[in-house]
Image (cartoon, rainbow over all chains, first blue to last red; front, side, top):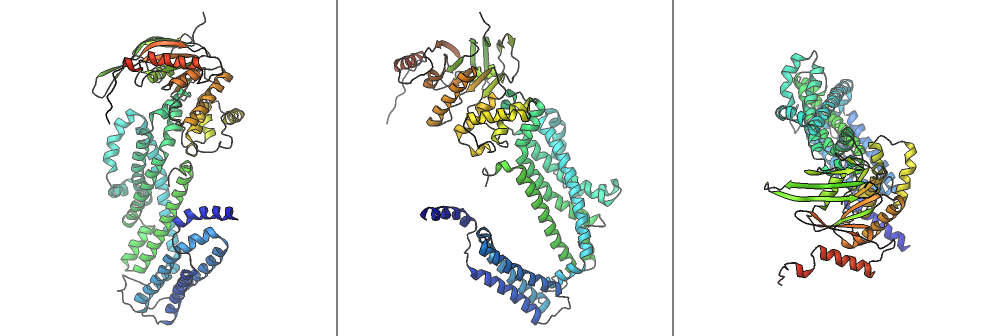
Length: 333
Length: 262
């Protein structure tokens, strides 16, 4: 009896450090109340602005149901309950924020239109314009991933070359250093002339944006490989090629991923700006186009889509990283 | 007379220090290492014993003189001369079994038929169930055991050990001394070990090379005829220890004593 309670308490300790918010049902009911209040406000306070609040109400209703489902699951699953209860205060704040936003915009027009539309209006337009938004998101994703994959590939090539060989370092390093500090987007006017389509021009710019951080981080990772690692490999009969690809490159992998993550951030900026200026498709273009019509609700809708899409991309890169660097688990926090 | 496995002929090795001053690490070293022997280099730190071991491994070149293996002059590292560092330096991105298999993979000799051999080594060093563990999950002693068998996987003619036990705690050290003896008796491999620890050298070696510092020279080569089961409390053991200490001029009357004031 005592033994089990002891192991349970030691197990619970790190979880409590991570999910340290109080675990009471109070916050659950408060959160449900905040969302229900949001629905009631939307239903019973008359609108100042003519919009279609249907999708917004479905969203709120969905949140209420989902919270209930989570609550039921948390009764069965302790690990889930810890996470869920920890986040409840924040979710409560979101509920309150949405209700207040609704009052300040759609219900009273306190915030000036068209610059600050209500959430109901944004959600509504998002559903209404979903075909074009999805197409734009897909276009942006294609542009981004093509540019990132090519840029990372070239970055790995030039990074390995400069990190490994003095000759390559001598010739490439100055070029990398000078070209690397120039933001990729400045090449846009030339890219639009050089490349047949705005899409290929965009790919080119993202390749440049992602190539530089991957190159420099790969090179520095390979250069910093400890000499003893090579010495051990040599005494085990390793060739130069083996030392490079099986010792130096794996050693540089954590660095390479820092380069890739930086490249992702650079590429997001390059992607949106190049679409805003040069392209005829994509989320950047959509924002610019919506702005031209004064359709700020559409602009906000696109921004939400961008946030979601970029988070997904980051999560994907993060998952690849934690798989490749799985040997680091337990070394780093 | 049979040819020695390693023959070192009038080897000198100098270094430049940070101030561009020349440091004589080794001066006129002549030494034979016979097949199947367990030899230790002892001496004060900076006496060039690690330099000598690195020269034998081919990790470093002599300024003058030659080192040859079975009559052929060494120019580079070779898998027939395994090397173990003071730190285990297992590759952190490889599991224990991948680390041990690395020598075979480097020589493109690894296939499924080698898995049994790797498992044999893992079981031998008591790391069964740690095959898939990563190095950071191991204690210092476990990691060093894995590093030793990693050097053995290529079946080298000679195993060069650079203070392999210096970084370990007393328990792990005794444990690893036994492992080295076990491997030596079982495989009859030539072993050359650098150590600070005179006890350890006497406990393990057949021959002890006593070296002096700056420039590193061989003072004397001692044969240790203590048989297979050695006890540190044995009077012969202690006599050898005293002899080495006096050779190293560590005894008080040969040394300028520092003044300790409290």
